[in-house]
Length: 189
Image 1 (cartoon, rainbow, N blue to C red):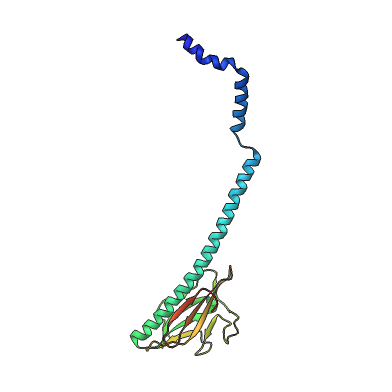
Image 2: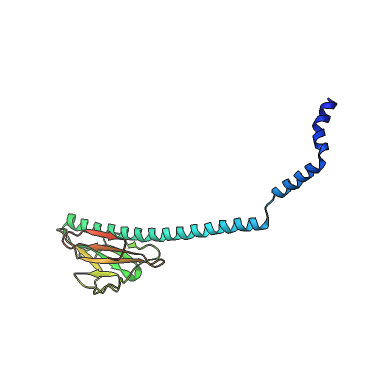
């Protein structure tokens, strides 16, 4: 047994210079230099910043689209009520408060109050149309900030402009007078 142990130990004792060089090389590979750590931290920081900005833009676009869809649902609901109950219903919009709701002909609120998401406003599209200053362009009763829907399916025509204050994106909702159809466009229309 002693000879077997000696043979295993012998190669290490024969080349003491080579093993010390190997130890030096191995010790250099065990750690990172300060420059390498700074480069890695800079890359991680850059990826984090890009990810945060992308998420913020995505959320902003989602809020704008969601606000447009919610308002379109309210407009379509008023049209459906007008047809089924055979009465005039209207969607009233309060641009300064960023709110809207459905009223019957006697001005009683029929549904709850909807509100635009954070950072979304009714905004002037600057298209040169009369009465567009508040983001509501009506082609019927001027400046009553309401769109009426009638029992036969017709509606007061117009457009509603929504703007995302953070990135300047727009959505437009239009109402066709003959059918009361509500359309959504992801730009100024």
